[in-house]
Length: 408
Image 1 (cartoon, rainbow, N blue to C red):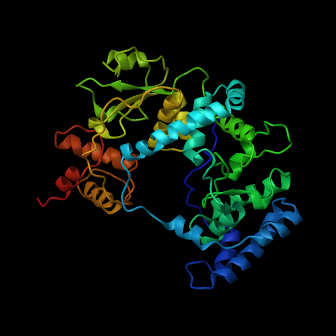
Image 2: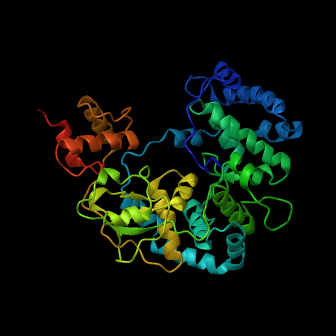
Image 3: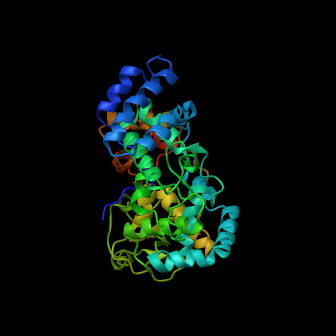
């Protein structure tokens, strides 16, 4: 069953009646006083909320009291100057401190975590790892009032239709009595609680595991762990199947095939010479891919269906590896064996945009030059690498950028 991830990049949308109302009363980019414009938008959206079935009291006392948050707009528009290397990301994701904290949480809440694992078939270590990745085990799930954050995003203009839908979901949560609006806290982007569910995902997957009549992912560890496991199970988690394993690739391996979209059985990968990093047999996976987040010079991983389920939580290979490696080490396993190419410098956003522009000029379609490394850019870069006779791993480096932009 196709399910939305708890945290995802909202899509571009067309104009809606509420958006038109906001535009007519002034948006943050129009030069009109934001507080005045926001109040007018809030009044207009209140009518839409009532039409959507939100209780009048909730509209009056919750939406009617929503506050404009300029910091939310700043964070929404912020773009990091440099991309983060996979090894820097994973060093932080599975740091010694986070591993130790995860092991402590696993011991402290062992009965609760094992109950969720038994009910949904998701290992307690994986549930714990997501908890650690999303909020550092509840120590940092955000202090923004979700209704304020989503109201600001719904008014601000860049992602209005998405934010409006999530705001209505947040108001429905209040309507249902799961949490008071002043306790509904989370990130600036609307993700809530210990494991950062968006409101729409909360409505679909949150669980009242402690039986108190409320689905509370802010204060109830049983609800947090069961809700997280429920989402993963409904997203297709296969009980008893490993997420994957670190592997060694044969010297003849075509790195253009190291991509989540290339799937085959582990028996087929084994026939091509792929081996476990420790020399042991590969796990049995019916649909497995090779991923090399740092290109041909870095570690390689064979990943299966449960890895793709983690991607449903956050559609980033680095994130999914962070969860998988953190879970493994919380459970007593070891770190990545192969060395990362730490001598490679990360490209800035501007450099990635220049690389994309150069690829497009040379006929290697890299998509819209936006400074973001996505599938189209990776495919274009692989095409260019093949044309110059180097390993086509699609990993952007300063050297490749210099070759692409050198005067002919």
